[in-house]
Length: 280
Image (cartoon, rainbow, N blue to C red; front, side, top):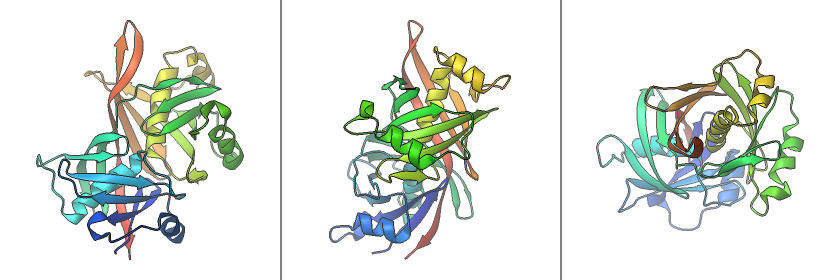
């Protein structure tokens, strides 16, 4: 069985072709061997272009991984899977259906845009926001992200009783002109990862929510005189640019309003690079 190694904006994965599987997969062992943030299996499907199965390094699964989703779309293209509609992949992950489209190819790097699930569970919590983007996330806005003790701060929120018994990933976000800088402590990894697609999506949504809530004053104090990190387009979409180390990611969504209140976020998309950096 070939082990493919993928990176999505710094998030690394072992990716397997489910057609090659003949038995149980040593998820914990393979993630430890290659030092990756997770493992994914691409399965053939009668109802979808393919199905995505994602696991954390501790062996837990059943959730979505945004950067992993972009990588598995690139992997499907590498294996020769073709979208049934000729352009956009329709696939299923642990949190439900998604779409994925390859926008550009530059050498080994493919720019992939995936549609995430609609987001309807979000609320102010503790000193930040709780947002479920297919994986549970806590988002806290901070003046600086560099120099943070991510182990201590991440564990503090990841294990906070308010998120029990499942827990939540912890994201720390600095607001800069036109972009967000995000660091994420992931449950299942139990440490910081170089990027987190669902966390970046949650951070982008929380930044928008904060500008339209009592927490707006808190954000203004962090970012005096700076432009909002999001752009509202003429068709009602909101675009947020996010820096994840050396790679840029973009989050799009459309807020649904009822009586002046945001009830959900739909048309949620995550766009960024995915590349295969090795195979054995």
